Length: 500
Image (cartoon, rainbow, N blue to C red; front, side):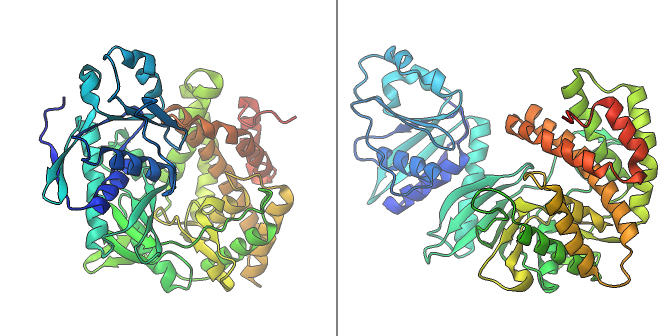
């Protein structure tokens, strides 16, 4: 059993036990065993039921006791296997129950683990004791699991301190970065969003002694989100209101802007909604944006430049990740030199074209369609922390060549035309078309590398299914004359995939 000091909590009533179950549900990961100790009536089943229902996001889910079946399984976001070993005849029966197999992809909750204690030496041990009208709980856990539990309990304390002591917590999503999100429902029925994004620390240096995130000018803390979101709202755009913040812990409690998507019921993109998102960009690019954005008293966020180093290291993701994946070998020095030579004049053009505030991930997953609102309030913007001052065309390309949705050439042109028309007279259409083509080529070059990195480094193979779409977008972008040399190189290297 782990020997670190236990986490000790007081649970004055059943509601506190249910909240602890929600907190543990946010902390567990596939491969965890949660061993629940306590005499009859101590609340082991109540705690297990709360964990299962929280992961299922179903407070009414039927969770029968597995006393007679010994194990009950739930095919959820994280598969859960609920064991009750009270009727276990001998410890060796654990082999027949398949504990090691279920832990390959899921979590085991084990009541009466004492019946086979040798199997649970490295488990998370939750011990419940009677204390007055309530319970005292002691949690012993291995270092990594303990850190997750401590962090989840800190989130609960943050919610309590923010004025929501009875709030429920549900997993919302984990994005392609270090951030995670929860849906918070208050006792009054209001929905909020918890952003959990610890400050970036201890990242490996990749160039000039700096980590990738700093070179690419990615946000280092949630202060960036607060500053940009507040500035967008002040300029009339529907970014989330900030309800509470703990900058040191990387926690934000923000407005829930809704669930509407840019997709029609059949899963296809809505040309009307994409066009409106293009017009919103035109409105943004017609404004002047400050470089210093207030976060709270005494704290400001300085919006970075989308500079040469950032463009270079993002493009090189194709060489670092896609080339080894597609060709089975690292990119050679000669290939890297030629790649850099071809991109150098194109990046120079990006540095000198029209500049504005660029959100950098402006596409369907990060824009909420709000049918009940009017004007640009219909478009809720939720991913703003990596904003930089860069090519205005970048976000148009991000939207019109949505990395997660098949956007036809017809809808792409609808977006571009809506944007250009909204820019009004005097807009340099030819300069925009050139910047649009280069930013589209750059963004999709970067994404080819990122999606392979997510699959190979981060264990998310589902991203590989998007590669053909990204290669199709690259082929479209390459039609502009300014990209003729790059186009020929990509064709020769096979970066554009199967064009059949």
